[in-house]
Length: 341
Image 1 (cartoon, helix red, strand yellow):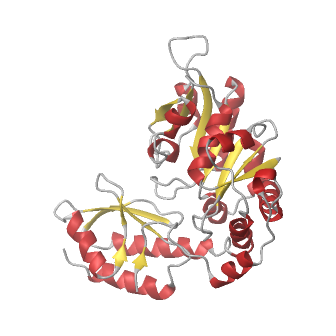
Image 2 (cartoon, one colour; image 1 turned 135 degrees about the vertical axis):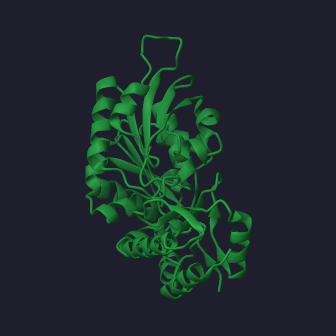
């Protein structure tokens, strides 16, 4: 039994999901003739109260498309220093859009409105890049699954409106935030120009992200997706997994959150652990004491068939998910409690 807690992307489709996928009605999505893809896009755009959606192979491509839609080469976007669009998308901001990033030293991957306003370059000062976009991530990956306070997101929106900036949310784990904070997704649709919603993180689909947006923001989305190589054909088989996930895998995210909290509590009680960051959703980030060798710790876990992530700079990450069962959970907690460096 392998317990893989490196990410919530390691899950495999359930038998029920696979059966649902096999019965999907499909067509050519490049012609917008795949009825299952069209249904998924409509379902999510209605859920968030946005005008339209477009299915992408990956979250990174959806985010990169959003940045391309909102900016011109030579401009600048504002994001937290831990943002996924900056750290984990292969430099795509500069490569795909010719745009630079103004990095904010936020808290657990989250910025506040004052920081955003202070980071905006004067639009008439042509020596600096023109600020055109603010991008936030909810929940935050490197921030340990932290959730934005929605009131702060609204305050950032006001700053965007005052300065004529577009507003994008990387919602790779937005469903985790909605469940954890019991929020209405249409509230997000009212303030953002675009939102990417990932189906393969937490929800258990094998792939896929839907980029949601206003009609104005999404006017050239199909063209940008084509340029990025994201046009797909009979992809309804995969889109069906997203529909199944929306119907069956959202409420159960609370189980992942509870298990992550229990892991965090056990880690806090261990002498070999220096610090455990606040745990709000399904991500646990912790640090070992200086005398504990990180490589040995991870090797020892691997001998117990347990995999976790090394995020660098001493930061270790555990992510709970659909395939992490209660039996695995109890075994893992026992291993952590019995561990001796």
